[in-house]
Image (cartoon, rainbow, N blue to C red; front, side, top):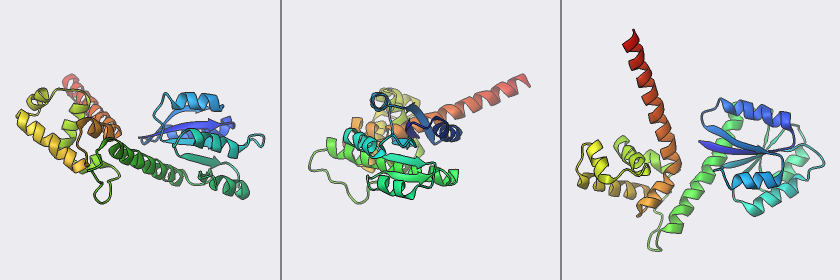
Length: 233
C-alpha cells in the first residue's frame, strides 16, 4: 500500500486525481492540505510514502515550497502538472522532484508513483537495519525490495501472529507445532530477512504484514459469506 499526502492549491485538479486513486487498491490518500502548516502537522500523524504537489497558482513559489518540504522530511515529492509548461517542469526537476504530466495515462502515472514509493520504502528498510544492527552486521549482496516476499506461507503466518503480540506458545498451539519449532521458524525468518532482533524484523515487515492481514481478513469475509449463502439456500 502506497500512502499519499496531497499539497494543493488547485482543488478541482487534485480532486480529479484523488477520485482516480480511490478505486486503486495499491494507493491510499491519507489527507489533502492547502497550507504548509497543515501539511507538516498531518505528516507527523500519518504514515506517508509520497507527497503529491498539484500547485498551479503563479503566486505560489513552487521551488520555495519544495525546499521547505525537503528541509523537513525525506519523503519523496511528486509534482503532477496539469499544463505543458516545460520550463517550469525542468526547474522543479532540478530540485529533485519527480514531475509527471496529468495527460499521461492513469496506468503509467500510477506505475511511476508506485516505483517512487517502492524506492523510498526500500531505503527506509535498509536504514532500519543499519540503524539497529551492530557494526559486525553487513548487508550481503542486494537488499530485497520486499523482504516479506522471500518467506513461504507458514513463515508469513508466524510473522503476522508475532505482529499481533501473540505469545510463542500460543502460536505453537495454533499452528500445531512445538515451541522449539516456532523458535526455529523465527530464527530462519531472521536469517532470510537479514536481521538479528525480532522487534526489528517486525518493523521491517510491518507494511507487508498489514497487507497480508487485509488479505486474510478479506478471505475470511468471503468464506463467511459463502457459508451464510449455503446455510440460507
